Image (cartoon, rainbow, N blue to C red; front, side, top):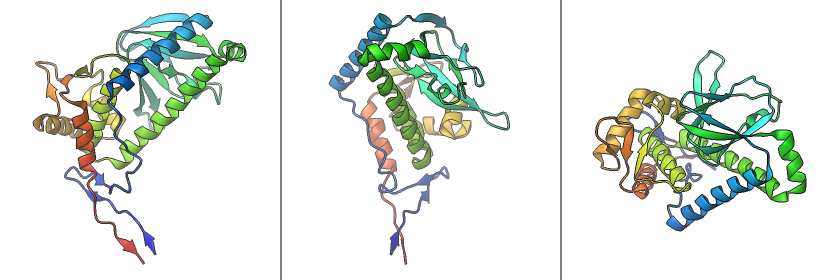
Length: 267
């Protein structure tokens, strides 16, 4: 006897899975103490890197490309400030947003395996990146174990983030996917000691849809629904500024979208 979870369909046509099928999704903590510790850990890591390594600092503006797919690998990049997106090109020429990066995140791990970067890293706002030669970093890690720990932790976070992003796209219906995107953005800011009650999205709705595997129209409908449900509010003119009264309410909304469904049994 084999049990299998079969998705039903939401009003938007996206599959809705049972809780068993989405067991990998878990509401993140919004504990203030945990966020404060995470913010301090980011600051401590950045200080360690600046103390132990010879870093090149580069100020970037929206649209600046940090590195491009096909470029020879040689450096890793640590974000000291700003917001960045990772973009890859599909075989038919379409751009796909595959990652978002915040202060304390690392860029360039994708270039290690084949000695060339496999995607583009693009700034979405004014920021600063720290550039470190990979060979110099490895040499420093040999004499400073704390640096090796920092490097491994950065790689581990990236693996976990890719897993969580895949879980969201594969298991959440459209409205919950957008809510999870806003929750992730707010949580990322909180972990860096920044305000979360009002955020400025550095992406267009088309880019958000591209990242979440949705159309622009579906993203707009989902945002409007979240606004009608008073989970978010648009701030005055530009609808890129979003007020989030309670981040926990977004997590509750996502959980509500994962209501149990009938699980048929195959003989």
